[in-house]
Length: 195
Ligand SMILES: Nc1nc2c(ncn2[C@@H]2O[C@H](COP(=O)(O)OP(=O)(O)OP(=O)(O)O)[C@@H](O)[C@H]2O)c(=O)[nH]1
Ligand SMILES: [Zn+2]
Image (tube, rainbow, N blue to C red; front, side, top):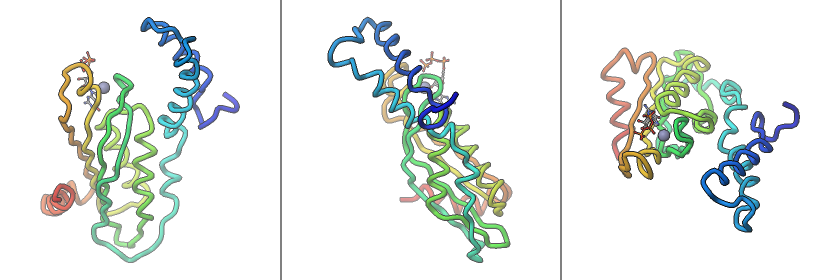
């Protein structure tokens, strides 16, 4: 697969598939409004699924010693992902927190948001996205604990199917001290969920 723009995404195949999809729903892929659509969707998918070619561990490669061994939490990280069952978006916010190891090693705050991006820009289910962010952080930083909470609306539940717009799905993944200590977990949860 040489020369694929944006990593693994083969935009040529997407274009052909979108033409086919348009024909399959009874549209005319050659009508003026739709002629550029397959190429647009190819570019959009390259962006939406760019995370498939990105290495989450590279994102976390930059760390520094700050001698901080208490909670670091980035809240309300806007997140857009794609439900792997229906290929429609689910979107909301992610909250990513950790307590550095006793060595006090931390990573840049933006890297927590980048980590969410890498996993969100893939076909996903919310539980896996939440777990993957927690596991990558736990493995690389070797912190005392990690807590990740994702709150999202799934358009597959809003615009079709059960049609319940506004329903929010909340998932969490806790590792280390957040798993072992109810007090530490609930303190972080109240910071995450409190407004
Ligand atoms: N657990 C989980 N389920 C999801 C996620 N995204 C979508 N789903 C669900 O995946 C399920 C797929 O169910 P199926 O019965 O195979 O598909 P379907 O007939 O389109 O289901 P409906 O959405 O109920 O119409 C649905 O219940 C979706 O709500 C997710 O991130 N996590
Ligand atoms: Zn879905």
